[in-house]
Length: 181
Image (tube, rainbow, N blue to C red; front, side, top):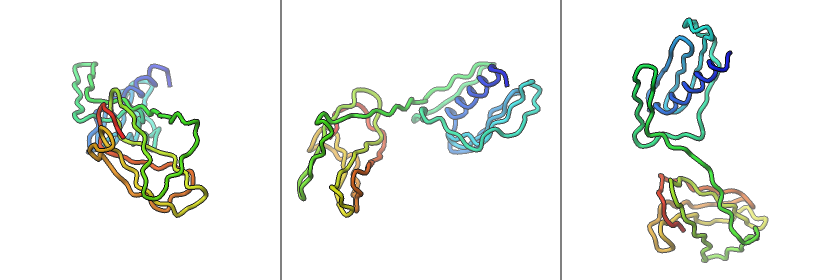
């Protein structure tokens, strides 16, 4: 496969992932045919000669992890040009607590919290490393609040039988810039 055909296939994958909705979709020309459902690519066939004789499927399933559909994804095709709007770039960021990595012992009935600020973009998940000092029957509640300790609860999850030093996550609808607790 030539570099230009590979580039066209990658572009097709990018566009297909961006214009995907809940239903099945297919994008093709004489060089490639890409199909999928939602933001998942389920098949990709190519013909380096550009004669429309697409070969065997080259993927079983693929997604583009760094792109997500926004609230309104749209695509406009004008001749050889395709304009896709509404995609969002997804970037993982880690916020380290500046205590030298020393865990704090959470006593029953007490709260342990971290305040952080999202300057731009959206947040959809937090993860915390939970020490339980070699126990496997510890329980806690993981919550996210907007604005501070008395702010609106964005999401909350009860953790039960937590393993020592395990990562626990809380996933929620996209939340914009602001201070969180």
